[in-house]
Length: 167
Image (cartoon, rainbow, N blue to C red; front, side, top):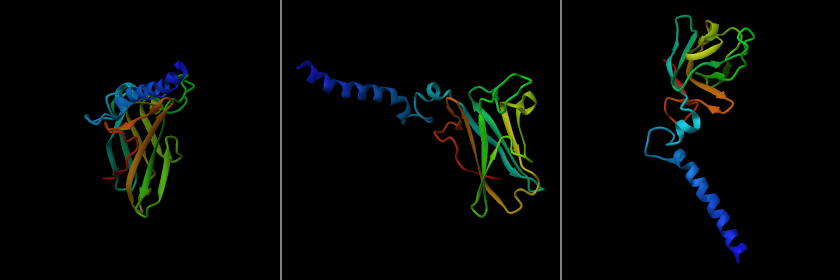
């Protein structure tokens, strides 16, 4: 009799724990990803400060951490004895619909953070393409940042990498 009761109780207990755990992630009565958002993801949010094309058809994208701490290493630094702990990239969508993903250390791009000679990101991260890059039209850009425990989210939303129009 006890075994029969335990078989019915285990799924109920598991489901109850799951619902309680997920409650912060599924709440719809606030503007972020739920009540557990800051606790689960550290609240690391970013926003685009600027996305524009200059007179030489170079794309310039500036991203700012708007919530959460900075100090992320974007590349390994032997001088500072630091390992890379954040992987960042942008993806550019061209007028013809094709896309190109640009990693932080892409050749011919001027990409840098605002700390440790550009190797780390405390508040502002910048991507600058070579001249002529947007000569055939750049329409949208999206940013992606990931670390060992998760991802950064776009300006208080549950979206980590939305497409944004280039100004």
